[in-house]
Length: 144
Image (cartoon, rainbow, N blue to C red; front, side, top):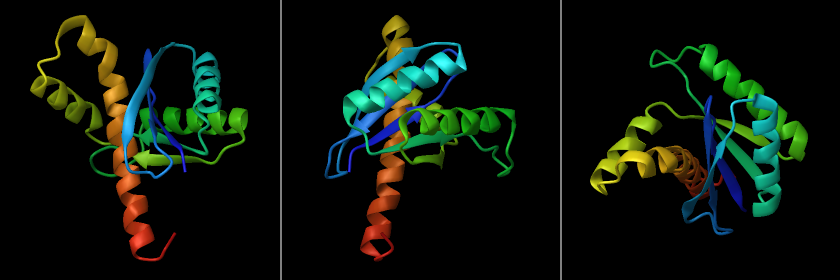
């Protein structure tokens, strides 16, 4: 199943997609949009273009497992993308993914404007990869 991973942000939203076998997640693009509705429309268009069958949106819970303002905004965004696409939209815990994305980019010595342009797409890959690991584990246990 092709799954679209989304790292929703106030100014930039990273997108990643996996192959049909759900083995490999890779970056697609970064949507540069501050308006929630226009961003949701751009993500819906990307989902259609990528032939996504499911959408996973990062859900930034607080470290103490509570839901804050940012998580609520992500939930509203995910719901809107689901309405626009007609696809199931899953919220997936994304705590520390942006930190991990910066660590990956440090490893590859990606700096400056190039780093800013890709960090959100890398975060989307991390979110999607985590979700794919969960799905693989569920399949192995016979739950999917």
